[in-house]
Structure formats: structure tokens, C-alpha cells
Image (cartoon, rainbow, N blue to C red; front, top):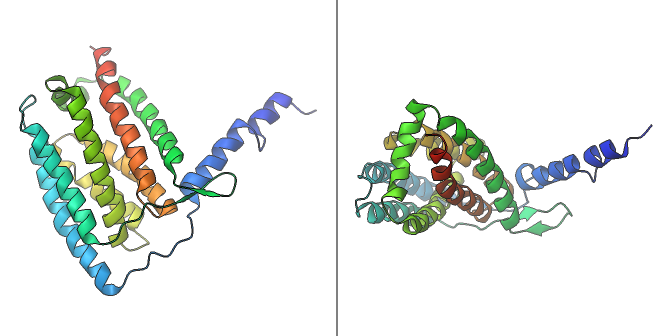
Length: 251
């Protein structure tokens, strides 16, 4: 005998079916496009990406080493964003990209990016409740949060947004395009996570790996950086405002 409640949940029009259709459209089935580059263009992109990745990682480590409350933190982090952005545009052409919709059409993936970023944010907020109660993990994260506590939160939010956009332009735009198609998802994720190693905060590297994997999958599907940018901003700004609240309950 049919169970209307179960069919409503698991059927094609039910919650599970809707989630499956969303994941298929947003993360699994690439949109057809032709972004082929000449050998010379690819060589140029790879050289620019290599130089930029080294310079950006060193600059990021130096910026995060600045004492919380020091006004140099803002220009330093904006300098990191400038490195990523200049390297991205200097490497070659970038694309906004398009994604499938559940109805069979195409979109710019803005809503998809927001929903994916919000889902990752929810997972990390739940994880933050655990981290906030483990001193060895809590300490380094508190150090990062101090930049927001001792400075202007809204200026930090603006800097966070600018850096998020620049990072996606470079890692999901230039870096992804510079790698062999067999390795561009995994390779861009690894390089993005590696760029945070000089920060000395292991959880930041872990977060970069998770975010990089999600936005890299979006880049594979859409062929561009718009969806990844929206996901990145949703996650990073959400974490900026949510983490202090979560950590204040873990004291």
C-alpha cells in the first residue's frame, strides 16, 4: 500500500528528489563550452600562475602574522588580494560561466552558488561548536578572530569579501585553467589549501581544502568563476559573523 508521506519525501517531486536534482545541476553535469587555448596561451598562463601562487602564499602568511589591531593588517590583506587578482587577469581570459537549472535551462549560477555556500556554512558552524570546546584547536582560530575583534568588523568584512573574490579569480579562474583537465579540480584545490600553510593555522588549511573542493566542482560544471565567487562570499562572510558568536558560547 502506498505511503503518501514517504512518496512525498522520496518521490521525484519530493525533498530528496529536489535535492538530487539540485546537486546534479550544480555540481555534477558540466555545461558544454569551448575554452580551448593555444600552446603559447597555456604556457603563459602556467608561468603567471606559478609566480603568483608563490608570491601570494608568502604575502598571505605575512599578513596573517600581523598583530591583531595593527592598522597594517588592512593594507597587507588588500595587497594579497591585489596579487591574486593581478595574477588572474594577467594569466589570460577568465569566464563567468553558466550552469544547468533543474528545469533544463541555464543560469549564471548565482542562486546555486548562494545555496551551496550556505550549506557549507551550516556544516562549518556545527563543527565550530566542537572546535570551540577543544583548547588546542580553539587557540589558533581565536587568533584569526582577533583581527575582527580589535579592528572594525565592517572593514574586515569588506576586506574579506575583496579577498574572496580575488582568490576565486585566481584559483578557480587562472589556476584551474592552467592545469591539465584530468587534474584541474584536485590540483586547484590542493594549491589553494597549500597557499594557507604559511598562516600556521591548520584549521584554515582544512577550511580552504573544503571550500576549494566545493568551488572547484562548481568551476568544473559552469566553466567560470561567478558561481564559485558567490559560494565563497556566502561562506566566508557567514563564518566571519557566526564564529565569534559560536566561540562566545564555548567559553
